[in-house]
Image (cartoon, rainbow, N blue to C red):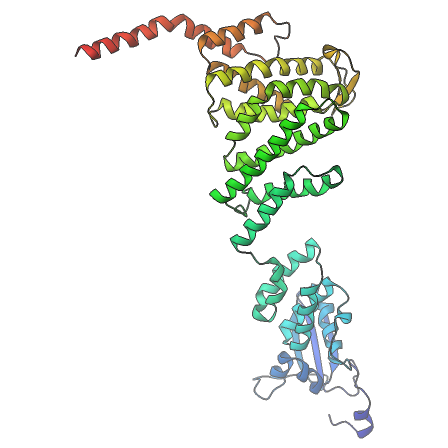
Length: 442
């Protein structure tokens, strides 16, 4: 349809039936069907899709309302974006980021612009999405949409690209140094976040760990954790001061986390050795700390449970003298705390009131009881006792049978095994001696 001079001077408008020469028919599988009256010279200039279908080379041409018709089939979610993009074609200037409004709109418009072949709109959407923050749901939608577009939109995914190992190691080392540096209380949230991310980096879940530690990384972690342990031991020397008591509890929390890290890397030897050597001091301080806070003793037990379990299963091998020392020191302490917990009056489903009368008073304090910790400790004690020389086993079991707190830890299994071994010891070892003599006589 040829336009008059007056008509050609005025900006053409989308949907103006009187001046249009083409119908864009937008349809969805759900049955939506809308006719948009357009002008071929405008949409051909802005869209390769329309340029191809309105060219002389296109094999067929539909006629609708005495005009050429181009059908566009789309998903329901893109219906409105199709109309938005058509409106952009009629704008007096190029599309800008202001026109996109937000990330969700930019994704939808980008999807349609890519299908219709609109380079300028694609470029604007890509530049916008590359620069602005995304919500988690928006990020997932971008991952579904952008990779299909190839090089035109690859810069949008720059923030999601994997980085090389050297970069990962660098940030890991910086994070482990900060997380084990015992920063002030005002940085607790930052420290906790760093600790959580370090553990996440080393965890295998649906994806492989972000970092597989080599000797260099393990050495750095070992040095950092040993520094944390050294500061903890120093705190034990002067923990009577109230400020030091706070440091004691803060270090306990850090050490509980640090053990998870050294366990993942299987470099827990120094940690276990230090904890074993400092056990007497730790117990002494924990009893004092418990007068001021209900968290201290159970936090101590949480770390101790991890240490004893590691020794009990042979992940760290200690001589029998050190193992006996660990059992004697911690058995008495664990029994004391468990008795206090069991004899307390429940104040809620999640906490109990623990009386510290056994330590000379100090009032009742609320602590959280963790059944898993108690079970871990009990199991570790049984295994460690059964691995000691039989005379040492007898000494520990005798004290257990004579103690009024016989219910926990329950050493029945250790007692039964000791009785059996002791009863058949002469016969079993005698048979071994006989076999040895026969072998030597051959």
